[in-house]
Length: 110
Image (cartoon, rainbow, N blue to C red; front, side, top):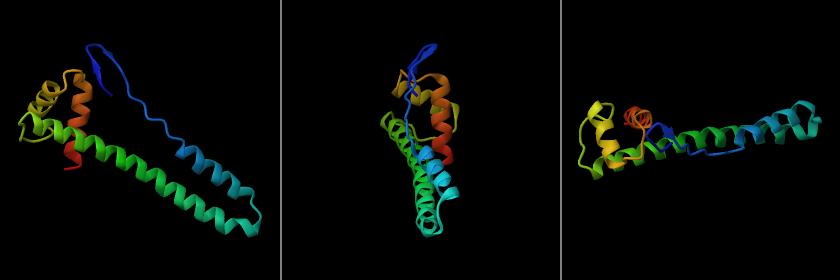
């Protein structure tokens, strides 16, 4: 997510929640009747957890962006050119593209 210049270094978060949900769904397809209720519940719980992880990550990025902007005294609209500029001043290692994405995401969650 953070980078400098033309060469951007990506921060990759690897989660296997999607694979777990898929494995549970496959198990449910061939499960005997006595296991179906438990597997159906497991699929529902795993699906909800996987969806929650995505929301939590987006919320964390938006909060980080807001905190960085507040730290440099920015108080305007989050989806403005000024916000992108302020964020890049606060975090010089951010690429323009990443700063735009972060400010837009923060604005959507505002």
